[in-house]
Length: 316
Image (tube, helix red, strand yellow):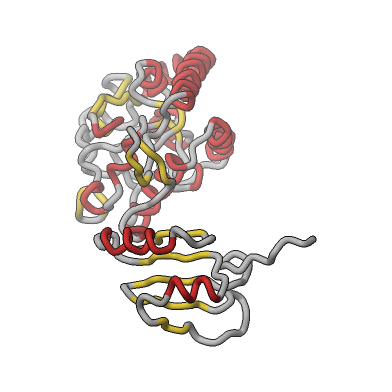
């Protein structure tokens, strides 16, 4: 004996849609069909029984909780799937799943990144990789230090305040690539192509991104990750506005620790910010990384970083 054919939105059957206090019967989905028929109020339960409706969707404003409760009670005796549409709020903020806390039903909008096992895995990845890479590159870093000392006067390292996890400002370390009397600690002035402030050795370091190597110290100190959104200076600008004023979701990128390399950087979004569109694109890549993080994504970014270093773009 065959199973009865389902009549519902997923199988091309009928669906009863209750919308804005009116009731609409939508014909079979996917067929060349008649336009929706509007039903008389208080007749929808009878129509649902008569037409063997499989699924009912209540699409009322969420503030109409009393009306929704009445409809739920009326449809409870029917052998149907009952759904409440969340379209009224779906465009306001992202929705993930339905959950519960202390017996109260909740809509999950977003989750804290790197919690539980993923948080432990991320910490182990940062500490082990950070220490390993630092030990391997120590000889190279020593040679860079000698080259900087021979090329120009001034300190070996450039220390600058940058945004970190949860908007906390911290000091980031870089090899000095500019003349000591020309560096901009605030970061308000962006480095541009053929910038006269950059030294001869500094130009090579910036081109190969070797000036970032001291940030391995920040990683071991727990201030940064190997992979994550790049830390920006507090005074960084996008067009004629501060970056965090120009891009609405900017601070959401600080839900995780900043990284030495990131998803935006391996897609060529590094160096000078030419316009507001590019600024938004960088933040979009950062948020995509946070929302889709996995250990294997980090490994992919590290491999892509190697290629970016071999064929550098927008680094000056």
